[in-house]
Length: 497
Image 1: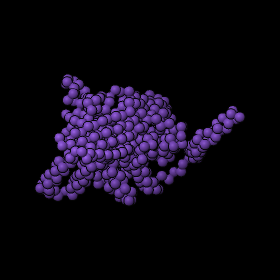
Image 2 (image 1 turned 120 degrees about the horizontal axis):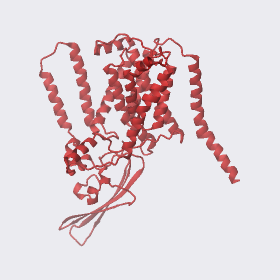
Image 3 (image 1 turned 135 degrees about the vertical axis):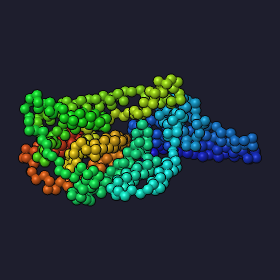
């Protein structure tokens, strides 16, 4: 994130003619820090409003007896924390700064807990040396004549080398737990995936299928068609056959993950219903979208999706209400306490509740519609890509894609929310940028490879529904954000008259 704090420094030098070389230098630094920024190299601060204004005055007297350094610190009493100058050492900081737990959040992890400082100290040269030693070992080993194996290992090693570089050199995201390096690796892998999608976009459909067959010889064959709407009678056998499907559990787990990403109960419900509508609308193209009515609305929406959304939102509420402690391992006396603190490392350091407020402004409304659209496109891409590229649903490539988007979505949506709701955030985050890029590129691949694959036209009732639905989406903001304020203004004027 961009640095948003404002620092002004004034130097004043006074000298006296009565002493040999006495000089006094006064430096006044005013720091105004806005949340969601990085404070002198420390961790980002979530939120979106200014919370700190601090003034530090340093007076240095150069006298024949030596150098005397005085520091005066002042800050508004209504604020909760303070940050030091970049050249200020830990010994120079006030005692309350070092002990107050409300300040611990603004200090680097190494300052908070010296016991784990090793894991937060840059190790760029060490990692470079380790990577080069590994490459030296590869260069010294006997050559393998298997071309396929060599190519696969070379590609994997190249991806690994790039991820190591990104882990060490990319900037941090807003997320810090379990370690900022993890989210830098996620960003690195996202770049690799985007590059692969761009490469795939330049291939034809036949060569793309051969590429995946090269990865796994079992691929490259058409998928068997399966329809879930052939037996829709509410019989015991039909219900058991549907509920024992492995994708029932996948539905619940998937919506649990989406709830953790979106952090909003209503948003998740709208997305859940809209995806079922998309399945109805596209069942003429994909047979597995042709499901029974009770499979759509009871098994999917009211059972699996609801369970996942409910558990996900409850998890978000737990993180929101949880009392966070930044006590270091070295400060915890008991082994049980140390174990508990270690497990807390894999939970959020803080939690920001998402309030999308889609009806309060046109910007919020457009934001919700855009995010909803991107989520739906991402979901549909999974079904179309596996159909066009002949990838079985349970294949590791599909599972890896779903897990990757979960990891991309956590920081990506968080950065998008920060950019849209924090007026001081001037740059769209890299994780959010890359998330949109990957989804859009996948959609372009679907459009390109889907030519001639879906000859059946859309039913008339589907076209009528979407025409009316898009009309409502367009008319609502016109009424809510333009016509309604004017009507309310006229009523107020009439009352005043």
